[in-house]
Length: 384
Length: 72
Ligand SMILES: Cc1ncc(COP(=O)(O)O)c(C=O)c1O
Image (cartoon, rainbow over all chains, first blue to last red; front, side, top):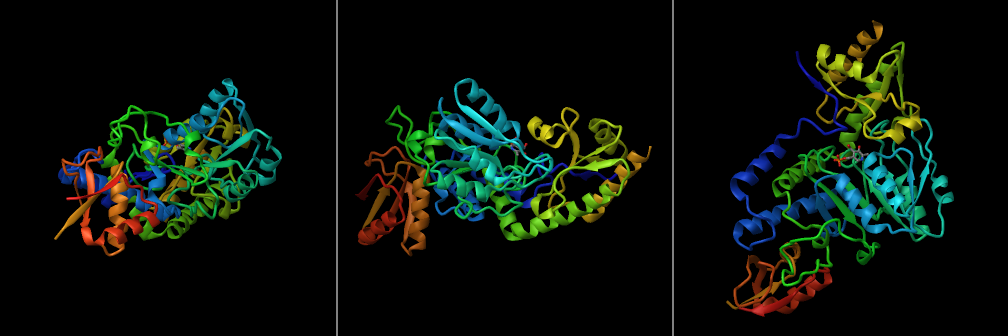
């Protein structure tokens, strides 16, 4: 049986061969600890980490690559900002479409005295920007939004949220897990103060890589690091350095992973985000059209393709999502993700809690034939 | 040829300085920080001493933080 991988929203696969080569090259020929020792291999490792910052800076229109700090995934970076920037008595606004990587830290902070407002989205996952502005209070400090939902693919109005944040002198944190590499992002035009991203999805890098852009409006003295420790800089001090990126990058970096991430981002830059997006939307349109034509299948999310990334959630009447996914895998070799997708609030919003949905998420390496095969498989499953 | 080095608080800054300097047409090289110079950052940027003023002005204009400058 040939396999079809339609789980790119969980992690992208396959990776471009350049990514694998860059990691192998790093581990074979460089291997040293970036930014620690000053010998040629350490400098070379540091240079690779720096080049990864540069590639990401180009992709997101960031003028200073040293405003990007690296970590292990977007979850870590979201935790950094939420727990490091919010204090008891502060108010934070978010949407009902968020992933648990935002919701769980917020619920924990709520118990410590941070006020949390969750703006309800429509059943398609759409957020009305005016509702954000209405929720602002004198003690509001931060707006946090996912750029696109990992359940429905719905794009949230990040640019409008950025304008609102600036107008009110507060800050915007964007969870770009589902948009980085597949949807245009411009931190200046979109007025994004914190852009958190993960390396292993649309950026086509390996797992264990992620990062955070910290904009110039952010007062660093008010953003506590998540961890403190060795940075290879200012070792005479027992205090954490106060400058970027070292303040937030304690401990040895995943330099081998970042070498792979650089290659992934370069691949995206060469192919072009617009071209990747149009490929994914073409596949998404086929999936939407195909699934909508099947009796007993319900698809979720906005019908307007321009409001989506390449993610389609659906259900087959009378069947559990896990059962559909198991049959897709066992009988047809189609890999996807059923259930709640770590986003119970989003499923409540679209009316699929606690059952969840089946999710197809095509990527840059999927073909029209593959998604047709997946649609036909659902047709057969739904018929019985 | 007489050389100097710029030392930094962090290798990330040294790498940024290297990039900025090369783009500005300066002949520079990242080297291990010479032993006599006390800096924790193991990487220093070597440059031609005659370029000193122009290079430092460029680094400053690009917002590169430096720890110090030494003749070697
Ligand atoms: C919207 C969103 N936020 C956060 C995450 C968490 O990503 P990671 O597991 O890489 O931290 C994901 C993916 O699982 C996601 O889709």
